Image (tube, rainbow, N blue to C red; front, side, top):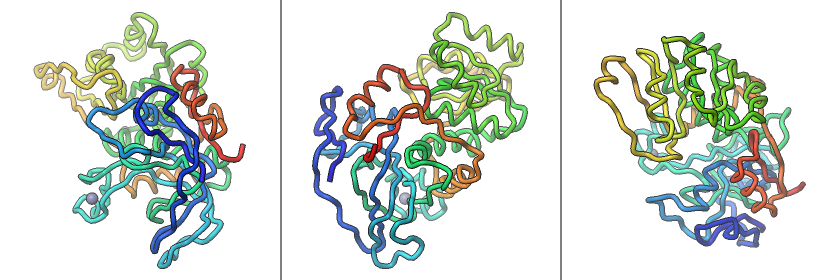
Length: 344
Ligand SMILES: [Zn+2]
């Protein structure tokens, strides 16, 4: 079967579209013929090399996938051949106290397909049926494969961790990134006031389309003053962080008394300063968040089925054009998600 693999870390040239052995279905599992897989920034980090993570090469990339069940292992009751499904990208032991309590993303063995083990950018994958969910009929395969990781991440951050409330003001960095776009939709659905930042003027429209009330261009000098113009001295209630060192200090300075920062990433650096006196006087809360549990995955999928959250696919590439797709994202040309399909 064809798959997108890397044999070592590096640039676009390390991406290969080639034949690898097809996996065999096992008892209790299902075999899915992948139709589409979207690219997350994670794919680029995995390709470039993540510090502290040693990957098993060759590694199949891709965390988000959607496809059709082509084989059912014995003991599988809930699905049948031909069912169209999406795949949940989190992996976990299933036996520890966290997993048994439905907090799989706290499991010591928690990982992500395409990051800690081979992923979904292959014609076939064999998965446990607890990690699949029916594809929504109103969405294409490309759209269906574009939503899991970013909505699971943003939903966990805003709903489960920060407990965002109606009329709160939330600052969301990267309003055209996958996780930023999902965060805007989730916040708007709750009834929060969304201030989103984007990198350039041509990206403003996308963030507005996602529902942002105010869109600021963070490459402009003093854009923080615009935040203050919008919210006054009060500050914002929640900062949705995934940038890290480059934005950390301004995130804290823009935060209202009693405000929360919730973070899922450190793209620009992971060691940040913290003034403890400011932290306790302003009664700030700093929260970490990573992926989400299986119950949260199901909550997110129900909302996708009910059209509460919408896909935002910017461009679709053929799976064999994986290098072009990574280049497109690396050059920040995308407004929303990039999907890869086997049958263009
Ligand atoms: Zn576990």
